[in-house]
Amino acid sequence: MPDMARTSAANVKGLFEHLVRALNGHMATSYNDVGGWRLDYNPVYGGYNIERIATKSGAVEQPFGSERHRAEEMWQMMRFGLNCLDMRAGKLRGYGDKRSSRGSRHSRG
Image (tube, helix red, strand yellow):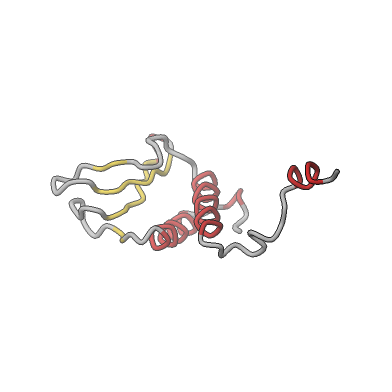
């Protein structure tokens, strides 16, 4: 995990590419690449946002919301999403063979 005080644009872009692959998607190659994902960045409006191109005219949808985030926030959010996908696929180490602390307390008689 990168030092959150120093999360770079390269860190965010690299993790975004991993997220797109995990979603079985593809990186947009042009403004009208329907179904393509892109990481939009605008520092004036607050940072990063994830977009998916919806139409040939270049309209986009924002499946994770329209709010923009700083680099470290976006990195953490994408990490969370990747961990969720790994858990669903049973890939996260230890997933499925441990009880939560809440479940353990309730299972004691």
